[in-house]
Image 1: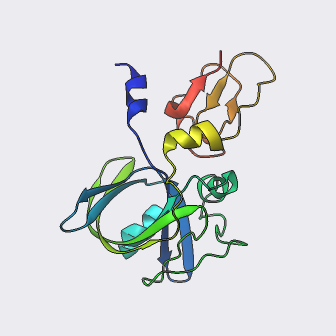
Image 2: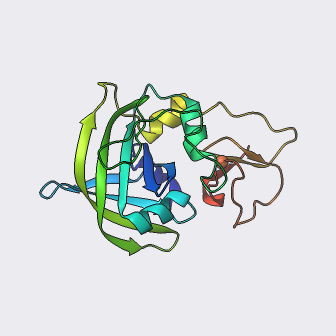
Amino acid sequence: MDKAAMYDLSYGLYVLTAKEGDKDNGCIINTAVQVTTTPNRITIAINKQNYTHDMILRTGLFNVSMISEKAVFPLFERFGFQSGKDVDKFDGFQCPASENGIKYVPEGVSSYISCKVVSQMDLGTHTLFLADVTDGVKLSKDAPMTYAYYHKNIKPKPVQPSKPGGYRCKICGYIYEGEPLPEDFICPICKHGAIDFEKIV
Ligand code: FE
């Protein structure tokens, strides 16, 4: 199995937001796919480690803001590199709410949609949610950002390690200086696992 074959699957990037009581939260996902047009339904797969996951499990409601090519790296740091368990991700970041009361990201996105969960499947590390799209608003004509665009243009260029060897997180650039990289290693910055690290040569 050549793992590089998997890199040719194309993805978009999205801010997934939910609300539970007074708590607003959101995270970055790359797994939103329209699966049927009639009815208009999407699936999202979300890692159980995300606090947003638990909120959606309990409330059955979420918004998906489609990140555009105008988005800047701090948007990914805000929603992707910290946990809603520890911080208020909307602190100092004004976001309006849509009709369902859930916030959406108004800048650096091309559209947002509102969704209601129809069913879910336990995938082990993730939960797959199937959801009805209940509303959608076009916010700009900017092109939606693909995962490939993010890696090429948005992600900070890798820093050189202080000594030879080690592993670099392909998501955020964090460097693990050591050998070997533990199989259960979790990136301290972006929380992705060892599978998303590459050996520095
Ligand atoms: Fe990382």
